[in-house]
Amino acid sequence: MTAAMVFTMMLGFALSVSVAVAIGLASIVGMQVSNAHMLISVKEIFNSINKFPLAAVPFFILAGNLMETGGISRRLVDFAKSIVGGVQGGLAISCVLTCMIFAAVSGSSVATTFAIGTILIPALIKLGYPTSYAAALQATSAELGVIIPPSIPLILYGVAAEISIGELFIAGFGPGVLISGALMVFVWAYCKWKGWGKHDGEGRLGFWTASWRAAWALLMPVIVLGGIYGGIFTPTEASAVAVAYALVVGMLIYREISLTDLYVVLRKSVISSGVIMFIIANAGLFAFLITRAGVPEAIGRWLEEVLQSPAMFLLGVNAALFMIGMFIETSAAIIVLAPILAPVAAHFGVDPVHFGLIMVVNLALGMITPPFGVNLFAACTVARISLDKIIRHLLPFVGVILLCLLIITYVPALSLGLRDLVYR
Image 1 (cartoon, rainbow, N blue to C red):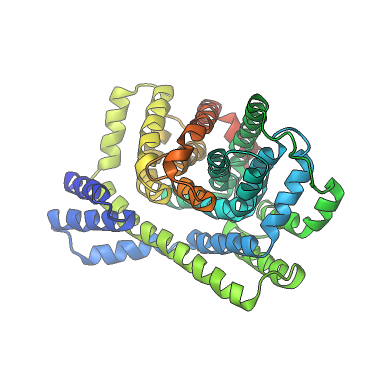
Image 2 (cartoon, rainbow, N blue to C red):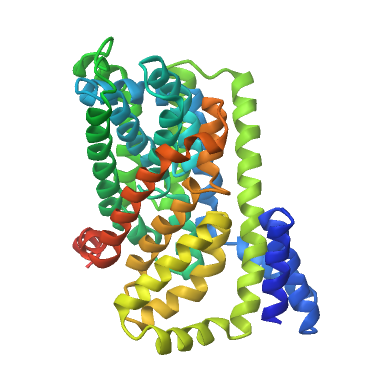
């Protein structure tokens, strides 16, 4: 059964069938081969999406789109420029810093790419940065949207592996800050070397002026994250609070969202949410079938024989996840692989929260690596260039993220220190 399912799924990918449909067809083939009753598929598909934490996914997507349309993202860009825009390469560094702040509410890297990229990519090009570099920088910086909490992939991992989402969120701060800091230092050094960004400070607002204009926007992550860790509401409830706040600020305070805009935002959010939920539904059935077939246990025993230490296990899993992330959409990969790999990681003594961060950071690299990097396609769409033109500038960014991934993997205190301080 398992061989038939994997073959069908890979054949679907090779024929450019959508990820959700390929996984769903593979599940149906597996049920037919094993003579399972087809009503099981209905039950498991419903169970896959009948989980309260998943309600956060459409709400955070909607919140990100409201922030983009309501002027919040533009004010965050001005605020970031007021902090770091005065140094050489300051506008490029502002891209990383803005994505870091925006990610603290949107939870989606693609939403971050469009919301921030539509502002900063033209600005970077105007100040003399190569178009290909601007697109590569934006695509990479937006990856923080799936690492800095709240994060949709972390929610999906928590649901799939049955791990506390609150613990995953607070564990994401250390890796997120590490990657942000590493990217900012690299961008600064690279711009110094290339001689770019010498006039980035022209026209930027003063810190206090920018802070005043962005005050309502900056208050949003404080309310959302403060409410979660203050015990006022759950991560799922926080997503609804984020939507309500973005709606009030965009329509009543900044007054940049009209009723017409609201329809467009809602329509785009429904489509994005539907795609993710369809993937989750089919991947849930797939995960149920391979678990029932004993695949996780078999993989665990095989890994024990081949990789006889936790360090080697983590190295092997990172290599495998990096390759998988290049070809399979992040949400689908998490839903399918988390139930398989999390128990194996626990057997090797790896904390499931730590492993969740390793898995999400690694698979997030797939968003900025060809051939199916969704962030790359989004950034190229905004910059109006073809994918092949940004590869040269993209590779150093991938190298920086990989270095950070090794640190995250082998220094568990980076992820678990803050978690242990709050929850233990």
